[in-house]
Amino acid sequence: AAGRAGARVILCEEDFVPGGRLLSDGGTIDGVPAAEWLSRTLAELADMPDVRIMTRTTLFGVYDGGTYGAIERVNDHLPSPPQHQVRQRLWRIVAKRCVVAAGAIERPLVFAGNDTPGVMMASAMRT
Image: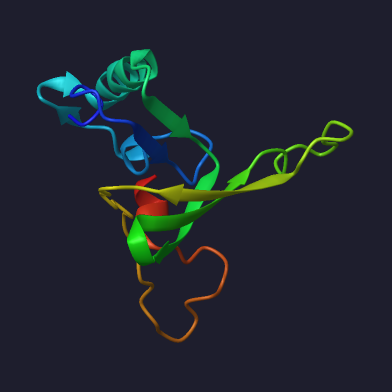
């Protein structure tokens, strides 16, 4: 909605592709298969001139005055990064408004033997 209204938008995604659990859970959104909805949405965002999608970027801090810290992993995923290229880039983002949708991390159940091979968390089993 902010991008459609002409606001400058930065979307930080920790993974190499946006989508989170939607990528493995599937389902439908507004009557459309999740993968198709995600593809359409990403295409729409990519076409907006003031929307920047930053994959492999982790927002790590919120500071005074609407300042946010983010680390972009530019070449960390490559076994041999290009010579004279940065591996990571630190971003200082100053924003008037922010929406943080950090998702969730599944909390493991603690019981004897929960660390043995074959014992999985529910999200691993679902995926």
